Each structure stands twice: as structure tokens, then as C-alpha cells.
Image (cartoon, rainbow, N blue to C red; front, side, top):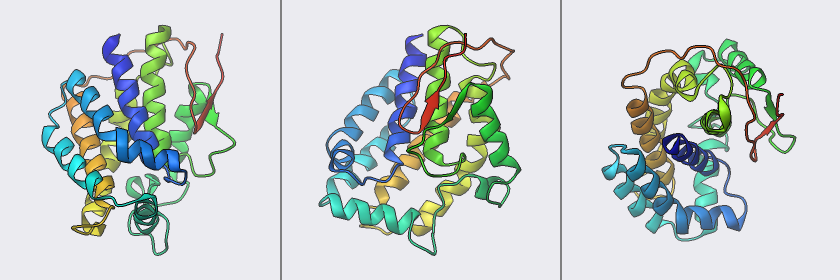
Length: 223
């Protein structure tokens, strides 16, 4: 169970990192703590990601201030024409609220979850999906979770949008700007997902149990 707890922390850490760093606290978390937190988790989980962690430390060290990180995030993910979309449905079926996005939202609802009112994006947002993976890990620790396990969701969705997501970041990022922090995070995520799914077999049906919620997901606790 310790492995599942650490996995939940890893994916939740990345989920928060891919949200807009609007508040000073979000900048501080990335600038001061993110590399150390991820390093501890990567070591515990035996992910082969030492190179990516080293690159992340280097790129974070280059971020001069909060505004630089916020501008990098905006230029990558928000300012039109958006060079890198955080809505994975674009990579999965080339559409907004297409079949893949509807399927992702159904996974949330089947687990007894819905988007928190403070989260104003589509259900296929990268952060929302990573938070859901964290939820599935934590729910299993709590006593069973939903029929879908974390690896099921990773295998069904995340492993398919990750390669084009990383490729889009590679094409958009410059050599010196703070935007490379997000490229390092995406590459680290790809290593983790590949590692988790190396011996993947579809999970059998499970009964639902109490779960968790965070900034982007609001959960019920089914009996």
C-alpha cells in the first residue's frame, strides 16, 4: 500500500504543477520544493528518471521570478494561437468534447466524482486526469476504490496522449526560457507511465469505496 500512497502523491504533485501558477504559493512550490518532492517520490517508486530530474533542477534554477514562470505558462498553454493544448482530447481524437473526453468524464462519474466548481476547464485537462490517477491510487489504499484502477486509466487514456503532448512541448519550448520546466515535467511523467505499464494487465472489477478530493475534483463518498 505504501507504493500506492507514494504514487498518489507523485501524480498529485504533477497535477498541481500543470495548473496555472497564478498565486505566489504556486510559484514557490515549483521554485523551492517541486524538484526535491519529485526526487524523493521517484526514488521510492524506482522510476528510471534521474536524468529528467537533473534537467528539471537545472531549468527550475533558471526561472528568475514568478512573472517569468507565469508568462512561460501563458505562452505555452493559454495565449492564442495556443502552441500546446492541455486538453488531451485534442491529441486523442482531434476534437473539443469529443468521444475521448466524454469517456474520460464518464470515468470520473463512475468513481463518484465531479469537477469542483472552482475548476473551469474541460474534463480532459491534463491536471484533472493526473489528479484522478492520484485519486484512484488513494482510493485503493482506502479499501478498494472504483472498478477502474490507476493503471487502467493510464493505459486507456494517458499513455495515448502523452507522446503527442511531449512532442508539442518539444516543438514549442525554447532553449533558455522557463517553459522548459514544463517539458521536463512532461518527460518525467512519460517515464513514470511507461514504468507503471510495463507489465500492465487489465484490472478485474472492484467495488467502490471512500476516496479523496483535491482542488480540481470534488468527490462523494459512496456507501
